[in-house]
Every structure is written in C-alpha cells, then in structure tokens.
Length: 147
Image 1 (cartoon, rainbow, N blue to C red):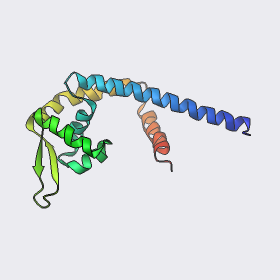
Image 2 (cartoon, rainbow, N blue to C red; image 1 turned 120 degrees about the vertical axis):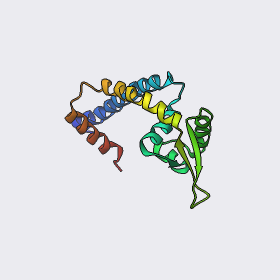
Image 3 (cartoon, rainbow, N blue to C red; image 1 turned 180 degrees about the vertical axis):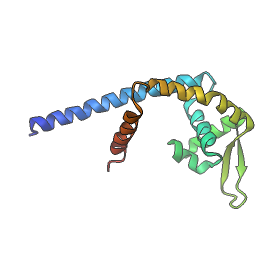
Image 4 (tube, rainbow, N blue to C red; image 1 turned 120 degrees about the horizontal axis):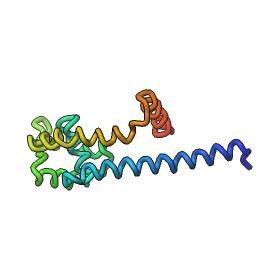
C-alpha cells in the first residue's frame, strides 16, 4: 500500500496531467482559430511554417518534423500546391528525393500571417516572465524526454 506522501504525489501527477491537457487545448484552439481565418487547417499551417522557417525540405522528413503520418504529407502538399503556396522540386543528386518549398505567394502569405499568429500565442503567455518561460520549457522537456 502507498504511503500518504506517495499517494499525494501520484494525485499531483494526475492533476498536472489535467492542467497540461487544458493548457494544450487552449493554446491549440487559439492557434487553430488564428490560422482558420486564412482558410488553412492546422496541418497545412504546420507545413507552411516549417518551410517558412527552415527552407525547402524533403517530403520524407516533413512528417517527422511536424509529427504527422508520411502518407498525409503527400495529401497536404497536394492541397498547398493547388492553392499556389508550395511547389515540389526534384533532387538533382537523388531522384527518389522530392523537396517541398514555398512559392512566392507562400512566402508572402507567411510574412503576412505569421507575425500576428505568434503575437496571439505570446499574449496568451504574457503573464509569465522570460525566466519563467525558460524554466517551464526546461521542466516540460524533463517530462517529454523521460525514458
């Protein structure tokens, strides 16, 4: 049987899970609402954001970087291509590799929408000091990378 202190610690872990889940949902809802006004879904925005900040990327690696199934990447890139925001580029040294990159329209869209998007998220976290944000990142990484 668990001791009282151990039981309290287990209950606190469960409470932390609930709080983290609610915060994640709140931030995700805010983010989704921010990008929906540009007729983008969260996955499309994630691909655009990756390409905007990291430049052209092999299709095979995009899924790993934004945590979605590789089969979905083809569909998402197809949709973004149809919207004129992304194009595909064959790798010259390895014909099996295809890159996705932003078009000029894609770059211009991200230059327009990303600053307000990041500001919305920043404002949601404005009650935290810079030091608190850094420490929270440190703590959450301890949870996320625990083996």
